Image (cartoon, rainbow, N blue to C red; front, top):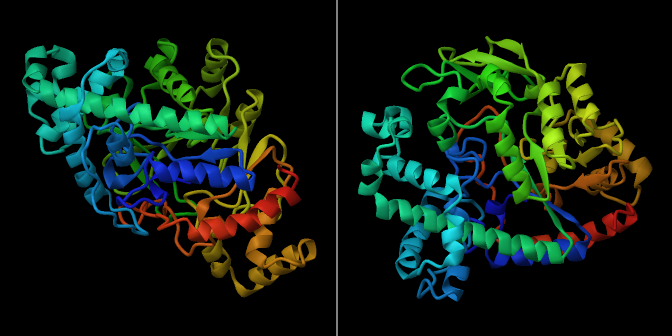
Length: 466
């Protein structure tokens, strides 16, 4: 369940009352894990995989109700429940109330400790400069702003000090609210699984402050970009546009930039899924001049060296490998060598059983919703699915039978998407496309979920997962 998809009267789901109610509901139904999408500041196309920072959180997740309880804002806006996320309106609305909260906030010891983290001020500077420069990518900023990391022009930063402080305050409140929610989940014995993109966006503080670790032109634009060749989702492949890493330099420096990203995210969540895991083994290298991802080159990476060093430094990490797609055997060998949990998606491998080292999914945020997936099968395929499910669960409707089939798999964990539980006719994201309606899926209220969870709870007990 993406946090942004939670019911909310303020245009986008957040860390507020609905998140706590959702936690209570899934606990009662028998769930023990809540998997979320990346929570970092949404960048191009509102994609959580094109973020402005690997460590900051998006301010759309701030709970206005919590700010009011603290006395930082006087009133709440008028409620307006929706079944689609409107990021632009939601952020404009919440920004107005965050300004009020900032004006009423008195710095304390907790806040002072928080802002001592190196990333907090760096992000505050970056996002302040970005907004000052009409939200353009840092590669298009005037020289004094663009060259700030190298020249350390603190006079430039001081000109914007109040705005930088505002953004540090926003991050403080976001982290405070997130950790309060996480503590509540811990009391319910619900773990939260986070998601970390393999690549970072060019328009991010990650690249702005760490340019040497990326293959860039002198002006900062990416020389080579990430993506995947033609696949299940797109005949022209997926041209993501993220800059590629300079793996030679990363190896020489013992992957410090990468290790910091992973370890930070692991501390934030209970489990961590790393997206596009296959790129630790081989990654698709596309010239930035190419308009599609058709033409590129597979480059062999040093995943074995990477994970050997990571687990020596951080033993006991709980990493889930997003190991989907057309993979060469070495990817799975790498996953298994370091005992990483993989993924088994029923929509991709309907008749194949999972194993205890995998997490079973009906689909992911990139898949068609279960209802539409079944609708789009050929007549013969639908008949085969009905017969397959009917033999196992004759008392169930076919879509519910598919959910039960997923829960009954041998995998150590089974995760159900909110779109599957609600039998929704909308998907969360269509890979290879940008913008609306991607990432805009939102639940209007809890009534439908409450009804469906009664049945899902019985399914969980039947699968002996509770």
